[in-house]
Each structure stands twice: as C-alpha cells, then as structure tokens.
Length: 147
Image 1 (spheres, rainbow, N blue to C red):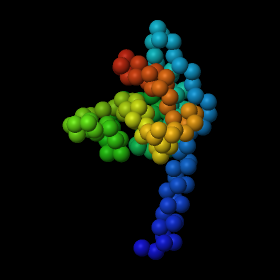
Image 2: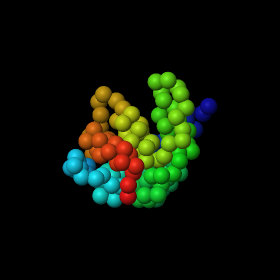
Image 3: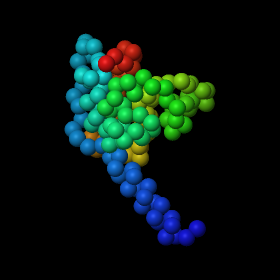
Image 4: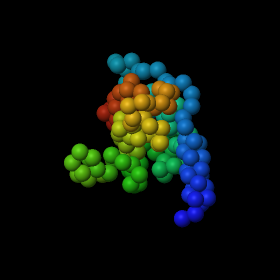
C-alpha cells in the first residue's frame, strides 16, 4: 500500500479522534445521601466528558450527554467493548443499556475513546472520568437510572 495513502488514513483518524477530546472542568461529586439523577448529577459528567461525541453527533448511535431517553436504549454496537461480553469469562452479557455501558466504558478506561484512560500514565483528569464521577454514575445505574 502506498505510504501517502497510509499517512492520509492516519491523519484522518487522528482528526476524527481529536474532535472527541472532552473539555471543561470536571463536575463535583454528589452527596452520598442524596438521590442521584440524570439531570442533576450524571448529565453534567456526561457533558464534561462525553459531549464531543455523544451530544448530537450520534456516535455509537446515541446522544446520552443530551438525550436522557438514550440512556435506556439497548446497546446494539459491537464497539461497546465490555458491554457485549464479560471480558474475564467471554460470556455474552447483552442486552445492556447505553447508560449501563457508559459506566462500564468509563470504568475500563475505554471512554472517552482513544484518550488512554486505561493506561497507567493517564491524561489530565479533565479528560478521563474520575473514580468519584464513576461512583456517581454507578449510584445512578444502581438506582435504575432516574431522570
């Protein structure tokens, strides 16, 4: 294959991924005694970390950062690594919802995509979903993902 074609392909991929880099300050942790909701607690996390790709861009066929109903959609994409199967046993685990998979993807460091959040040397916390934010999302999922 021509090296110019390969370089162009790599540049296109890098450009696409760069558009998905989250920006903004991380949201504050939620009070442990308070009911966790999408609107009050989880949406600010999703907007800070996921909105470059999931707030109208429909990547992964959902816009969970701006559309509460998308949290309850069943995942239908094999791109949702960790949501299609339990990676430790390779046992199928579907169907799961986009909301459930957002937590799984944040915990395994695969989202935000290509940001190396699953590596030992992590990027700044403004990019990756922090452990405190993951706990907020976990409480929301455990409560049935209320709006």
